[in-house]
Amino acid sequence: MARSFDLSVYLVTDRRLCGDRGMIETVRQAVAGGVTLVQLRDPDASTRELMGDANALQDILRPKAIPLIINDRVDVALAVDADGVHLGQDDMPAKEARALLGRERIVGLSVGTMEELRASEDSLPYVDYVGIGPVRGTATKPGAGQAIGAEGFRAVRERIALPAVAIGGLRSSDAAELLAAGASGLAVVSAICAAPDAAAAARALAQALRG
Ligand code: TZP
Ligand code: MG
Image (cartoon, rainbow, N blue to C red):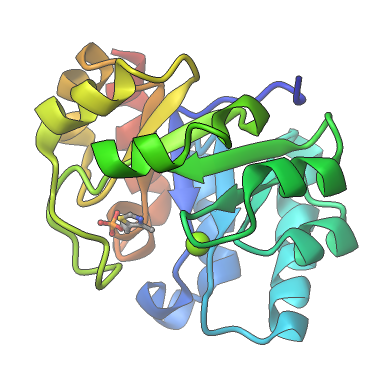
């Protein structure tokens, strides 16, 4: 369906965690370390800020053919010609997002619990991958819900016939357990954004995921 993508080292941005280095420079360094996909996530940004950030990220990511996914905002993804969107349970339903974005773009969906899985049944045919979590406790997203652990990840993952990325409180040391539970990769915010050396943090994840 969509263009090819690699979920293994999936960076979700949070500019509040990037410090003086800034979000764009953090992504530049993380890309040098081996990030395979970037999701621009900034619920507090204005539409203009989001578009500006997306354009700046595309300058870094396009030459390396690393997809840029926009969190929530189908309109922004279209306006900047991003590679796709990542939708939460309260965002635009995947069916409508797919109709707007076309077959080529990537549509991801967050599914954290069995209840959310049931609620997603109509959406999954329009989705390319799912994000499952929070696997561990996380301070990055207040209200992310109860941590489900690797076993909770596996239980949801087994019921979805799509690639799945694990998210929430994850570090490179979690890679082996989650790969064994069926993850295609780890989606991280603080493990890279809050790391003093974002390139080294991304490299450690890439190495752990390669096994
Ligand atoms: N969705 C579920 S948990 C989460 C998001 C965006 C935040 C994960 O952040 P961190 O810092 O990797 O725990
Ligand atoms: Mg959302």
